[in-house]
Length: 147
Image (cartoon, rainbow, N blue to C red; front, side, top):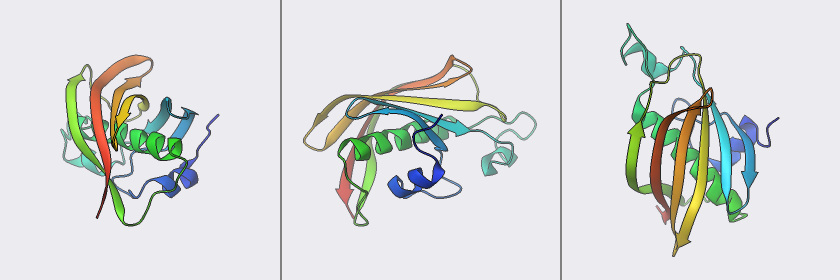
């Protein structure tokens, strides 16, 4: 069961194909955490060039998927819609660890929790899992800025 499908997600994130990396939100608790899903398909455009003989999802895209889940968490927690004149930016990524590769056919489960929010700066604890196994973990910091 999902609480946000792709049509709902498109209302919260400005990203579009091929950089939209959240397919569904499975659970959400305002001001606390989110669990989202990314279906990893062999049809992803990066697989044709990222180890074609052994396709692996680039780690930076796993971290980007976690950041997109964090953006949904923040925007929904603030009970607002994204504004056309603002952008949700990374301002820091700490402690990133990649534990195992993500391959075509995997379902990437994105788990993000808010650690703290101070003056428009949000800090999150984030982890990505496949089949219940940790694949990536990181501490993310993000902010919303006018463009």
